[in-house]
Length: 91
Image (tube, rainbow, N blue to C red):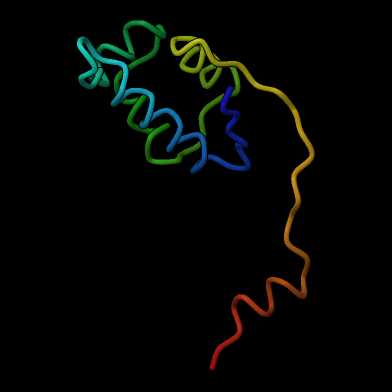
């Protein structure tokens, strides 16, 4: 089983978008309207999620449940200050 680690809203956005585009009839894409109806949220909410905007935890869970997904807390390796300085170092 492939486990996605969601560290922020952009990770959630990518996960929802990927599943929506693969979950339609005959392997085609599911529309945002279809997903919204199945999750009991508005189409605009689906677009907000897919743009990486903030939504409530309950709303995110409603959308994830449509795809049979839940959340599992796991330790995440965050970058250190030194790593960040190296990454953003200007030439």
